[in-house]
Length: 549
Image (cartoon, rainbow, N blue to C red; front, side, top):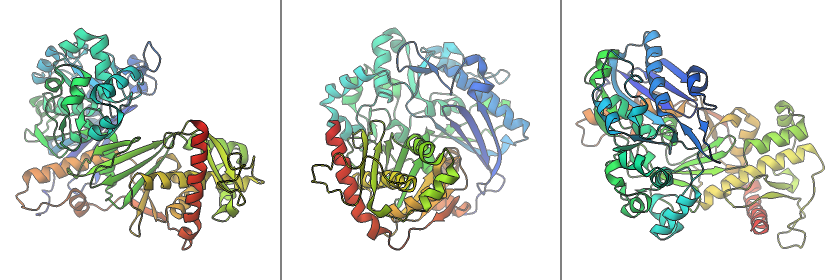
């Protein structure tokens, strides 16, 4: 590989729930400019709260697509005001919140193809560009009926999992499209094309409706993830003539074409600037993390989430298997857990007066293994396993004893309560990851992200329970960085005449260092302490699960 052409830059976007952010990287993939638009505060006329608006019925949430168009006008102007030289941009890509859908009118596609560089985008791609002006996003959970109908039509829940990588989820795009087809049939019939949020982002720059990529397309309950094409059975179960509205799906590494004349004339983008397929925010975050198959990503937030890579797609009854964003023939897995930071915060309030410094002191004052005291806290109905309740065991509790389902009422000190909670959460995460096919071994490494990843005391427990070193990111915007990195890589592949091109990770790391910092190593005796506790955790979770059924 020759050296990258100096002076070229790469532009990445992340259209998340609450904001649109842009980042410009130079040829060494260092940040040279960034800008953002917060929907609630910068675009108050749309009256969003947290980037969305509640619908008239329970569990409904929507966005007006024009808000996103207007945000693009503003974010590009903010980049220009920072004196970002957009005439150097060689390639553009993006990341979008997953599952949301947009419904283009005939007029909208015509407007997209004939943009006037003298006018703002939002003056041309306005409400009339879409047949659905209040479009559902991932927060919408109003499609339980449609999920059941789609699964029944294709032969059941297991068949849906095998084809698409996930059972039918209310927020997924397929059930949302079906609801619009059923309740607003004329709007569906008038929709010439349907975009995801990510492919909508690419469409703006392309000046035409852009294809959906395999990775974000995996979050629709419509794509056959092994064949990398729309499943006819799923399309038929969703809505008529859907394939022509979706268009053919493509790899996330695809160069879709040159940027439209609008951007060349209005913002001085080079006419040769390439538009690269955009993808969903979770796949884009994986691309931004620059991790390989030995890594397990643990996001510690309101929901704790595990992210991992697989060469072959596992069959998961819960969680999501998506096409991998950068290794086209591989897969990624996402597992979400309900009982994350809210449970940790509740324990902090009760046992440490809401003081995280005190919480950490108490956690560290108790030895690993916690004298055999363990707890499982499923305050809300957990997803995997499907169980609710709290169970505490001391070292004397036996799985087969009559009192196993009662356990102990409370531990004798705040220190033991706190360590039992954190160890219990991490034993849960490890057990589920193992059950779902992740292979723990000597090369396993953990990347911790999310709000609690700043808490080194919790990270040390992760290192010990997982028996693996824990790293954090020094650059927090993984999805955004992933978008710009992918723009650079797709252009390299597009221009490369090498018979064996570099892999995505090798290419990016040939230009920039990994933004990862080692923070914790496991203690030498970790496996000896936690392997038996893992078996006990499984017994405890099984008891809670059988008591929930």
